[in-house]
Image (cartoon, rainbow, N blue to C red; front, top):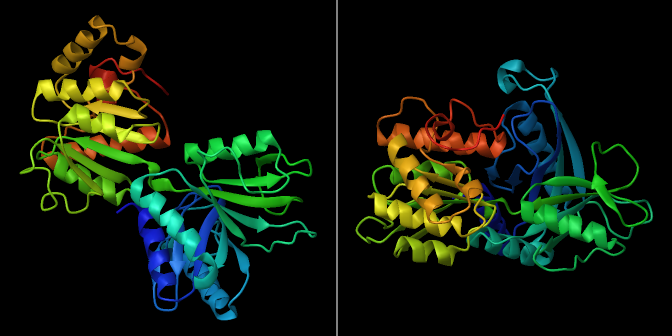
Length: 380
């Protein structure tokens, strides 16, 4: 289950039991930290769900979250300093600062918000939580005030925002990038580097499960791929036209299992810039069918398993058929990092390593099989 889905499912479950919880969210980082902005954990009376990095820093945030639960109102900020104040054996090699917002969620007030976020996370729909971090002195709202926006809608229910600021918020939410923002006097917004500067601060927290890992083919390599994808927080979709392969017994961690011809399934999924598609089908014809369908949509990442010869021949046929060569230069084929992988599990690791690298750094070089042995565009 994707991290975002886990958090918001737990939020709904806790509030439906008429129990409050404290949500600790990393809203800003400086230097090297174990988690990025958007990482979160739920602290209730009897449990903790999620993590913001572990160690002494998380323990201190947990303590403050329990204090907030005891007080029963408000929100508070916590600064986790990993530059040397804590035991280095506990925090490892991190040496930065995380700023964490701890907000209280109450059953009578916040359950509808949690349900909207859980629904969006479960179905890979765009949505974002906006939380007031630091209001102006004259504001009627307190720190921790929250609302949900659907970035597909043209309006954002925040009074006084300029039209350009609304479009910026929508674009950031659709992009899926958590952002600490400052609202200016004229209704403008800009990134906030620090919390200790004047101005109203908000934290934009998109539902991260909009990042989908779509695995076309339910064979041997797909099984560890689906498991790793779930571990890494992707909304995992497995497609195959054989129910004997694409089923819950083989893929217990997948969020969706689709038994349908590959092209029809991919057309129905409506790929977008948050979609990562991997073709590991049982034959060349099915891989070509999958790639053709994916190339018709704005997919973030398209990869195909296979030999150097097969990858080049397939893409050459596509170009001869009139497909834009610039699109073909973005296909990760052969897919994976060059780590000498042989077993299905090793190949899955090589594939997911390339996806992580692409997602985090965008770097493609001689370690990337698609660049080394295919026509994938090099990027440093």
